[in-house]
Amino acid sequence: MKKLMTALLFAAMLGGAVTGCSSGSGAVSATENKTETTKSSEKAATTASEKASETEKSEAAGDVTIWYYWETEGHQKALNHIIEEFNGSQKEVKVQAKYVPFADFKKQLSIGASADELPDLVILDNPDHASYAAMGIFADLTGRFDVSTYYPGPVNSCTLDGKLYGVPFGSNCLLLFYNEDMLKAAGCKVPTTWDELLTTAKACTTGQVSGFAHCSLQNEEGTFNFLPWVWSTGATSYEINSEGGIKALNMVKKLVDSGAMTKEAINWTQGDTMNQFISGNLAMMINGTWQVPTMRQEAPDLKWNVAPIPMDKKQASGLGGENYAVIKGGNEEGAVKFLKYATSEETCLYMMNAMGYISSDSVIAKKQFKGDPVYDAFVEEMQYANARGPLPEWPDISDAISLAFNEVMTDTSTPEEAAAKAQAVIDGIIKK
Image: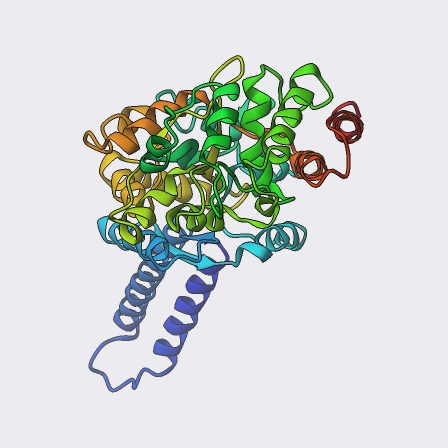
């Protein structure tokens, strides 16, 4: 309205200027001059009003800024590609993306929230979703976006107190990777239980080769790989000092104490673990979907396959991936419009295949890989994949869990001692 009033005032001033500059030469009468001036003023005012209306409409539809943290050039190119397609498909919303380094992402979100300098849309790691939803910076998308065909795990990671605060971007999960030649040489079949895994891992451990490993860093990456042991016992992420939680810690201890799992895994990222596997230093590992393209490219002659993670009482895997979240109070409608485009089948398939992810939409995922047995196994495992959290204080709980299995692996604490310490932290959080 301010712009409209300014335009009208300007038009009126313009009309006065035209009247004041009349030559009075007798070509037109004063009355005619006044009439023409009035028409000119009205025309200018109408034009200004139309321009103001268009500007307001543009601001209402507006621009949408996305923050993301992907460092991989291929991921960035894929995102920019769909943004360009979306921008070219309509005129109401213009999307642009901004890279924020992963190490700074959480800090930038927190600072932005307090300074009211946030984007309209973010792509973030799913275990972090609940903590920001609890801060009140994400828009409630309940009833505004249909996730009825999405896998439960990814949807749960976007949900807090029964409300939907985001849309799953893409998902991945964990499986057991195994070297076919090494298992054959050891006379072993693919293990399906914990006991079988221990036996097979010991049989495959020779010289520089360790029978088994997974990333065991003392951070979220390590927690992600350890928790399937806990879930397989029937315990939850919040029940480390339980029969199941202690049993899971004891399983890791048995693997390490037998020499079948190297202690070096406490220093390995998931990428490091994959490199050890394709270099022939590991017979088996737990790892994720996103490693498959790299393994096929860098080790085309290596004979390997995947299988469910050996279980205790039930099959379990960890859910990884990212979510979209719309910032509350930003251009919510514009962001939702882009989300509907980005999650449509054709666009979703393009992004997932470019990034080695599984669509979080089960309908799309089931036909995503066209009979690729390795990826099909990951898609099948999605129904057993558990989300970490969702809980606003999940990062602190994750730290307690990763510290517990690190202390067990390094023989700093017994499984019982480590479980008790972790549980004290967890209880102090969830029982507030």
